[in-house]
Image (cartoon, rainbow, N blue to C red; front, side, top):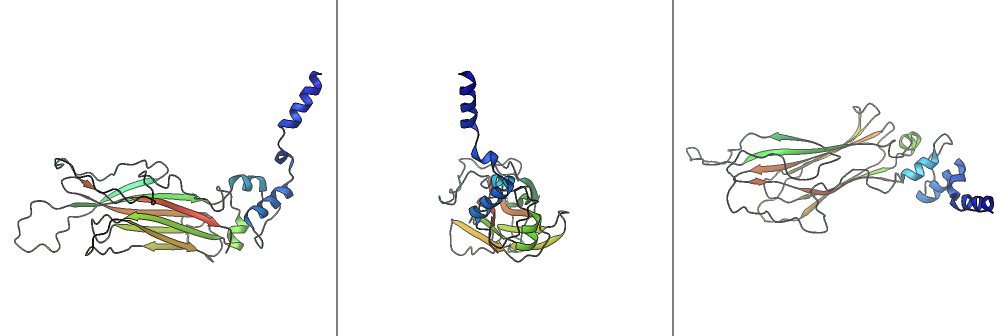
Length: 249
């Protein structure tokens, strides 16, 4: 009786997928993502590809480090009861795990101030940079797909109209080779804001890489945000950053 119970238990606990052949995993991948026309060599571990699910998902970690969503308008600045006269701040508050961050303090901008004017305070501006490097093979993609099929790589980002300056946001995305240095394709955005009309919403930035050529192994995603310190810290925020592989070319 005990032996019979053990055999039945093992039979019920064994997942059907654990006995699938490599060819069956390959077929499952093709059915899941419609990879008709894409090279699918038998040497690829198709079970690992299927479990990684590299398509139609965001490959960036922690895409909203400020805890905000584009579905809700950005919060209005919180005016302090007392001005902050302490040393300038250049690092914003947030959860930046998964990102490599840095800050660049900019020279004071006195342009537009008449000669002889008495200056009491000027805003101290800085760029706050956040960067991630996406390893496409580690995310489940295979070399033949990247080199021959070259699936679309979609970039998306949402930044706040902070009204701090006419240049408050920059995006630099590079498709890199295996050495993480060779640039195969790139896209740069440096929009100029219209400060003549007040607007405080999210602005979308997007781009699709296609037909970029063989050799791409990494995506370097980098954006910079303009911050000011003047009797308090005023920053520009982002949300919904994404790098997504689309299974079409």
